[in-house]
Image (tube, rainbow, N blue to C red; front, top):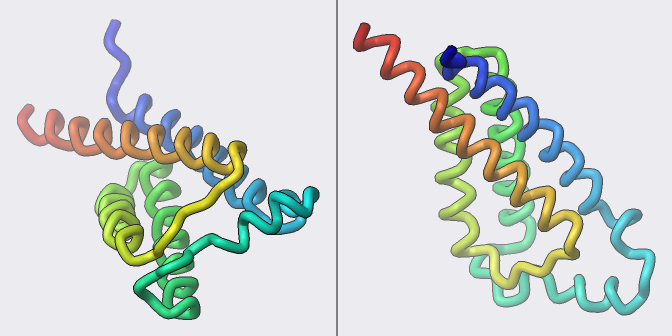
Length: 136
């Protein structure tokens, strides 16, 4: 028996949402700065960034919120969810070119990788499920 793509997309988007929220919590200063050596290394984050720090922070906040909205949209199987998530992933790739040095601790890096992988798989299944339903 084949499982519908919408069901797989929904479970993957739920996993992406969960790890996205955990990643947001794990990368906060009160979680990371327990060791003074790690805190000193993390000060080098965004070194040589091409964008002003305030502009970089604002654009990252917008991309983060659109990613969250897109994941919720895919979870609820709305047609705009996949396009919102696709746009936010494209914007995050472009933004990474201008954000300078990326320094992370292992836990946020792992959670971000899992969230991004689940989001990409959910996005792919969402588009494939929409394509298959339109050809029938």
